Amino acid sequence: MLLTGNQYVESLRDDREVYVDGERVKDVPSHPAFQHSVAWRARIYDMAHEERYRNVMSYADADGTLQAIPNRPPRSKDDWRAKRQWVETVLDDLNGIVLRVGDETVGSLWSLLDGRKLLDEVDPRFGRNIELQVERARALDLMTVSANTDPKGDRSRRPQDQDPDMLLHVVKETDAGIIVRGAKYETAAPYAHQAFVKPTIANWGDEKLSDYALGFVCAMNAPGLKHICRASHAVGRNPEDYPIASRFDELDTLIVFDDVLVPWEQVLFYRHTRAAAFIRGMLHRYTGYPFLARMQRFADMMIGAALHNARQTGLDKQQAVREKLATLACYRESINAFLTAAVEEGQTSEAGLVMPHQSLLYSGRTVACAKLPEMMHLTRELCGGQICVTPDAASFRSPETGPWLEKFYSVSDSWQAEDRRKLLAFARDLVNSGHAGHRVTFHLFAQSPPFAHLNAVFQTFDWSEPLEFVKNAAGLSDRVMKS
Image 1 (cartoon, helix red, strand yellow):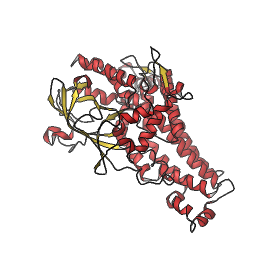
Image 2: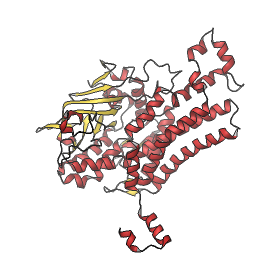
Image 3: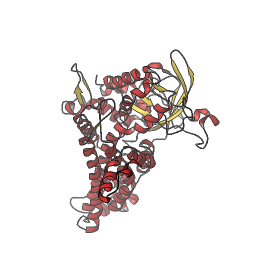
Image 4: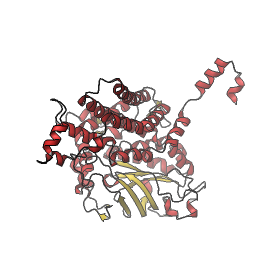
């Protein structure tokens, strides 16, 4: 079934234990730190019920019931094209960038479908649980997020040789399920329905069967689960001065598992280091695609801000400015090319799903993330120093200072002071604010560090073709291909 926005909002009033700024949150949907994020997620739910969006946002399953496009396991290239159109439609409607809405996480569960044979080696129940959870997320239209990184503690020491809670682990088995203790970092958890909790990059205790090697699905209102959120970039911000941060700050959370019971049907693997290694290696084989689609739209936002400013100030005819704009365009089009090619060259997974061509997808992710700081700085150059020195909206409204700002910020008949102020505020929040800096750092957390990006490319690239080409071109013997 497709949830409505109101149903989603009411589903968050489930007595979940959420803290921000040192205080317990009484009502997540109405709290200033969460209200905007809840509102745009509710808007996404409502879009699927509107006539103009219904065919883009939903599909009919076997019995005719409408279901959400993002939660559908991909079985054709057209499924991926539909998912990309879903992302683009959502971003167009919201007029901004959102990253944690569920579609970037449900793909992690599909990765486990691909590893079912491996998981069945330990316990066939786990394979059945994966199918159950994939279907549950699809059929119930749940917002699923992903709990990944632990606090870790001293990484030079094994988890057993320090406070064991630094890595999430099992402390007890019961007839009802496993009891887990520790903590994870997760974005958007306070206003999600559930999280796919999986192991971080670690040694899991250097044991074949480790209590640290586990994955499960956890409801965000589970007894003993505590959400401790970072301070919001939105609270106290004037939307006129911070048009992005005030609306699209997706709160990151330390989720504390204080002896939380995970029912057996929600356990996806447990005490299985091979499964933990598998999911770490295959984690983004599906989820990287919607992330990359959003990065393309972020590139569009940088291009639009920079080009509007260049046209405002009459600099768009200068060759040096055009070269910088063309560099931004190349960045954007490279992401577009990777997205398009990854689907056109799609591959069949172990579970029979269609996954984006892996080395193309991972290469695109590497380029998009590695070049992002450079592209943001290029946008700063093109927008000029005024994005860091322009007074706030209140100064433009003041009878004492407003006339002066009207004079100095009106650059032509087409670009009067108010439009220029709006553009500079948008550009500042996009590439020069605390929220902008947070976004760059966030990608190191959410999409893995650069070494992991490149390792994913190394693991998925087909090295045989260039090796064979050079063997033939150089006249090498067949022995070299066996070395």
